[in-house]
Amino acid sequence: MSDRTAIVTGAARGIGLATTKQLLAEGWQVAMVDRDAETLQAETASLNNAFGVVCDVSEPDQVASMVDEVAGDGGSLDALVNNAGVADFGPLEETDFARWRRVMATNLDGVFLCSQAAIPALKRRRGAIVNIASISGLRASTLRVAYGTSKAGVIQLTKQQAAELGEFGVRANCVCPGPVRTKLAMAVHSPEIIAAYHDAIPLNRYGSEDEIANMIAFLCSDKASYVTGQTISVDGGFDTTGVGLPALRAEAES
Ligand SMILES: NC(=O)c1ccc[n+]([C@@H]2O[C@H](COP(=O)([O-])OP(=O)(O)OC[C@H]3O[C@@H](n4cnc5c(N)ncnc54)[C@H](O)[C@@H]3O)[C@@H](O)[C@H]2O)c1
Image (cartoon, rainbow, N blue to C red; front, side, top):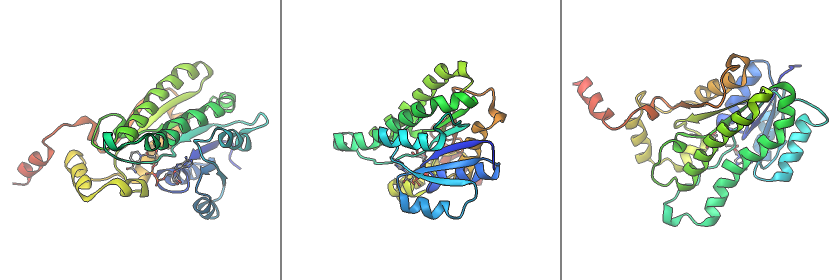
């Protein structure tokens, strides 16, 4: 049995599942949290040292029971990965309050609720929080009024967590993934959006779940023992660039 325990939310698929597998490979025990009970059960069945907890991270009572199940009774927790997220894109004027709340409830409330519930257990182990935001929280784009704003909130919440929890040895960092071909992204990335991403990313491609998981696992580990309050883009260079990459590429090819 491993002596390090992590909670990964949104672990049934995509980046959360890749992160779970990476942590398991590094010897962690992982509590895989998701509201999709069927997919969660199918995935946990094939993994050693992992167990599933069905929980909607936007529901305070469910979050309290989930943390209690994993680290209650004076139990400890070494890392919390707040990865569960939803993407529901729409223009500013067509984003009704129900859509706004649906996005905020998981993407921002969920991070707040899980982190708050886990603080006592994290303090006992001087553990780490890793929040998953997005490049959409760093730069505005079309259709992302709720999604982008929720992710910008996650970036700020991470800084607040780092400021308040540092004296207890608890670190908090934020990962901003660029585009990854998960179910979440493919539901909202049209062919035009995919082409536009390629145009704007120096590495000229989407990332993989494992490339994001590598950074998350690093931030959970002792190798990042002096890193806190940081927002780290894992985005093929997207955040560093402006316009003009396609023209430069065409020049290089000619
Ligand atoms: N894929 C991308 O291109 C991309 C880019 C930037 C950021 N992100 C962020 O990465 C994270 C993971 O995204 P992904 O692409 O792997 O998505 P995904 O849709 O493949 O997986 C998300 C998982 O979260 C679960 N989930 C959603 N709402 C939940 C809730 N309220 N409670 C519990 N579980 C819930 C889903 O059931 C699903 O298993 C998200 O926070 C997302 O915003 C993804």
